[in-house]
Amino acid sequence: MSMNFSAPTPVPAVEADGLVKVFGTQRAVDGVSLTVPQGAVYGVLGPNGAGKTTTIRMLATLLRPDRGNARIFGHDVLREPNAVRSLVGVTGQYASVDEDMTATENLVIFSRLLGLSRADARRKSAELLEEFDLVKAANKPLKNFSGGMRRRLDLAASLIATPPLLFLDEPTTGLDPRTRAQMWETIRRLVREGATVLLTTQYLDEADQLADRIAVIDHGKVIADGTADELKASVGVSSLHLTLADRAMTNRARTVVAEYLDSDVTVTPEAGRLTATLKDTGVTPEVLIRLRDNGVAVDELTVSKPSLDEVFLTITGHPADDTEQEVA
Picture (spheres, rainbow, N blue to C red):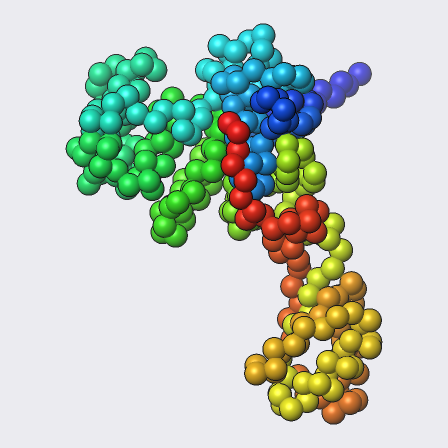
């Protein structure tokens, strides 16, 4: 008699069910539910004021939910807050001990508070300063740091204890493109090494680049959830981009494409380019045949999926860069 034993399914890194937080008359978070598997980057995407930071603070035991419940690696955030805190790191949680102290001094103190020996604290601090390109600023007081340098130091501080779950609350806001790319690579490395990351962002390209799965949150509610490709597919259309060999044929081409696809066609006359919505990519060859039969030659043709910008606009009714101030 043979018996087959399958490995138990690991508990999710985060399970949130119906989280609600009210400030006065405003429901900052209105029934948010999330499931984040271990070893993934989970993106929470939304504009300022959507409820992202408030959700993070509840999951990290920094704020008590008014309703709902949440578990971190199976530990209840209300009943087992100390266990939860030992498993998570939060960017922004450690702004500084003293603005007049240097980056090295601040990191050493954080390390000592987390139980590292004096020698290990100095070693770990030096490693983090190098990783986040802060070696030249190691002996500068924090009050002289730029906003981008502070963001990098915040992330460095959250990694001292190498927690299995990291809450990164808009970690690249205000960073220059080079530093932002470095931060992205650090996040990817952490996940390769086994960490789980819950990343809040208002940058659509950041969610697209990093997240294995994305929850779109707006006005305190999760209004969509899926992989980037699933969210793009939910919009239901792709775009057909044509560059004509002869710009003089633009009007004729526009008429042919609009009639065949039964869709609006956007024209850039000076470049001889046309863009049309495409519900079925399989008809693309027929479009070329119709154009050829009407004497229109095409230099270039591309088909693109919807962007996350289009997804966000479609499902929320407004752009992702709408800015409202978050309550907490």
